[in-house]
Amino acid sequence: GRGLTAPGASGFRGDALEKFCLQQPLDCDDIYAQGYQEDGVYLIYPSGPSVPVPVFCDMTTGGGKWTVFQKRFNGSVSFFRGWNDYKLGFGRADGEYWLGCHVTPRVASPVPAIPVPASTGPCTPPQWPHPSSPPPGDSLSYHSGQKFSTFDRDQDLFVQNCAALSSGAFWFRSCHFANLNGFYLGGSHLSYANGINWAQWKGFYYSLKRTEMKIRRA
Image 1 (cartoon, rainbow, N blue to C red):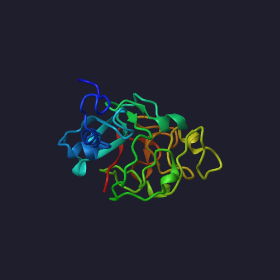
Image 2 (image 1 turned 180 degrees about the horizontal axis):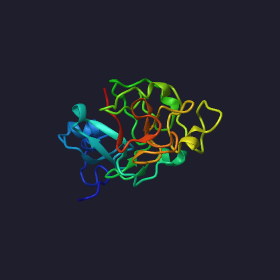
Image 3 (image 1 turned 90 degrees about the vertical axis):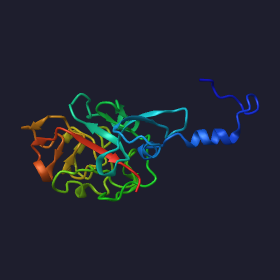
Image 4 (image 1 turned 30 degrees about the vertical axis):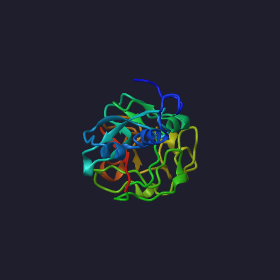
């Protein structure tokens, strides 16, 4: 289509430009409000109308409107990465990916989120991200209030680097009960606590085969 030019040159009105900007969705909640209610990849514009960001929207689980910022299901993407990768994001929204620091919701869903300070990491939403269909057992409370750590930025409470020991990146404490960015080991494994572990359900020797972390407004 025709590119936008300065108001006056083509009669493009300021209020029309404002409406154009307001229509640019900031998250999957906005996408849902526009009438798109099927799961899939959509473009959001959290940094402005000239910077589209592909994101996977879960529009069906628990009422939908979820902006998915972590998705794993086949091990095709390595999640054992450094701080800058987690800040910028990696992977593709139509596959496995980490969204990065593009979206910080105004208010995350409080049910059953565990509050953590917004300063705990470069991509931490105001409240704890949680699976909308969590497996049995609470493996997140242990991590409440912790800073995000990667192998090249150790912010946990353990004497050693939990991210390096656990082959992941997470809000580690000393070290974890949940390691959702650990190695994709596809089920039972012999190595200790370095898979996609959810300890209160499957222990430290079982790697989950599918995980998603997602946020939405209250």
